[in-house]
Image (cartoon, rainbow, N blue to C red):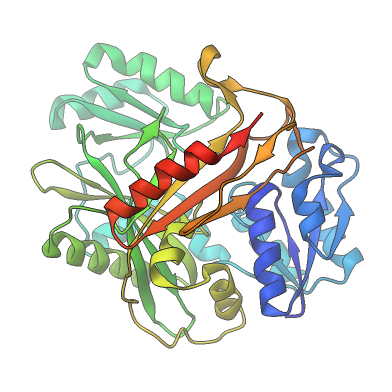
Length: 407
């Protein structure tokens, strides 16, 4: 590889561009018309406009992204997360164009990107699961029958997609039809749904993993992502605190077993629920780089984006699970109006005074003068704070959040 096209925008595109520069690789940004002056365009070595598509579809237009790769002479594509990162079709199109795909194989994306298929992989690998439907359904009555057999509450999910949008919890049989209709509508009307038994007030745990093409699987760190709003993660920390040694071992072993069973290579996040009674249950695999990857980087001393370059180039990882040092927390900084139910706040960033000091890292997608466009998400930056202990990380986080001024 010598030149990487970044098929994304915002903070993750900036993050990949920086890793390219550190690794001595040229980077190419792509941009919609509203993003002409965006930070990711500035961060890359060169930029190619994606003309002609509607704003909301620009970064999802495979043909235009591949045309940009050809125009720029890029020989590799990094998808970041979101947009086309979870598309097996796009991954295959990149490979068919003779380019290096910096991500898992199309087959692995297809297998693990479907939550029902991923549950089957986990079951074969001997990983603990909550009771769940084995096939998707377009009929809420089947979910009601499942709830009668396995008990309430149940969580309804779309079989594909992530980000917490295709999720609804029903605590009574009467709530199931409305919950079913709600997630189908949120997914665009054509989604297939299934149900699992819901583990109430559980912790949401993750493992950040890397797997190479030679069969090695490494767990970089555990993470806790329990602090959420509307099933959307807003604060993440690594390592997951207050875990006993047995739970930590089970998390790592289950993650490695799933990825080996899937023949996986690349960066991945394995997600689990931990009940108050110690019940550990597999949720899903995100077959891509995770939004929360910086906290794992901070405690492991690794650049995970550069590691994905190495894996794509066919290099062996050459190490085992790294020794975790200290504690890191990530805070997602959004352009939202809390006075209007956290509705998106659009417009121009007029004030941008980020924090600094010991243990403070900022992964920005915006700067002073940036426009927050109506067509895209509201994530402005990720603030990552690291300390020698969880207590020190919290103390530094209080200071850093207090220093951060955005308007």
